[in-house]
Length: 398
Ligand code: AMP
Image (tube, rainbow, N blue to C red; front, side):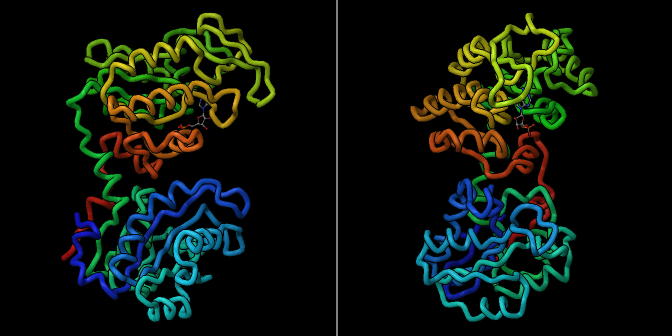
């Protein structure tokens, strides 16, 4: 695997570089609501500027049904204009038009040309060669820095490889792969899992069972485990199809080095709403109409006591419905403590992308964590011990 630093610097100078970035940021209307992914992409762009390359950037945003959708990258163009020299940033309204390719061909060193949403063309998702060829006309060197899409093969990260001799990964891709693959298990090590479904985290459980010292299961997924132990979970979320598997995992864990921690109490309401009356309840006292929406204070203490003795943590999935203030305490308390322990270097903390990353960023705690991934699906795959085919198939180059 080759990173951009290894492309001979004289080869970068004055050359045009097409960066596949992941600018798929959360938007509220036309406003960027979190610039986490944009900031994470800056190292590669800044490096290209320093090396006096001509920079063309492409990305998708959301899942547009047509060009008329409001998923334009124009707000990101405005962001880049603020971040860099505003006179050096250009935007094209179509990523493969003759006009946009001409702009790329006439760029000056250090100028940035942002292309409109790749998914405005169906060729992107179809991994079309024709579309990829047109994209390749923008530049001489291709850089893939879009970790968030690396579990999918699309034209801008897959077919496009056929049209470049010089291709490499950017700094973000390199960092993500380093942190999320070949995780060393030499330290006292725990895995925190949460979120809605057992099925999406099953790969991680299987991968870390008998490797981790502890696995903490919170969030909605914990109810499938608790129900498999015949606990009364009221109206809480659970996956019927996964009950047998959950029971098997708990039984299997007895003969492994891994201790599985399940919640003992929850913040309950009768409906999922920001104005519900809430009550903390032991799992042994659930009424039929109770819905567990966050882990309770006893569980927070139980989890944190153990977490404090660990040297490494991998975290994927919130402890409750953190999007609503009433149910974010469990996720916030864990995040605060892990952040503190990480800042004094007692703990190496790695967070998978998606909801957990969003929660930690929203809490303003991401900087103390060793690594917060920008990719949800891609990080989940790697943390489940699977390979990313796209990355495997990379030839790199000289
Ligand atoms: P996942 O994509 O599986 O990580 O799930 C994330 C989602 O799980 C978030 O949107 C949370 O609101 C949701 N979630 C977490 N805990 C619960 C719970 N106890 N009940 C219902 N949904 C939950």
